[in-house]
Image (cartoon, rainbow, N blue to C red; front, top):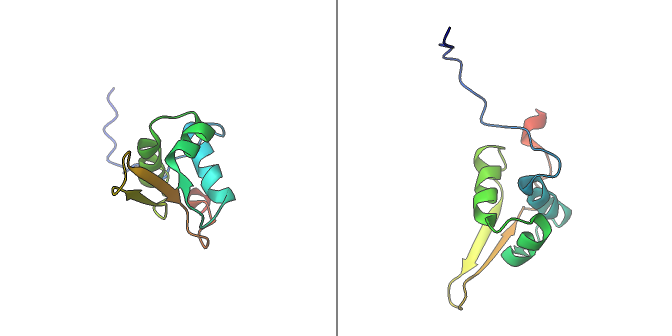
Length: 94
């Protein structure tokens, strides 16, 4: 029988401990308020899709406070990501 439930799914999912998302989040949380370059996040997480993983953290896991900036005045463009210093809690912990 088909599941016809209309119950909305939670947008906040659980992170696997050593997933690429979790490794990026851990790096951001360890240096609150400090920008971390995309190449460094690639090195720390093993993911060349840092922007996609950050988007996943924002959309699926509720970390909407993650900020980023891309400097397009230089080639190649340089992107940095950071988590504001006052944002430590896990959105799924509520």
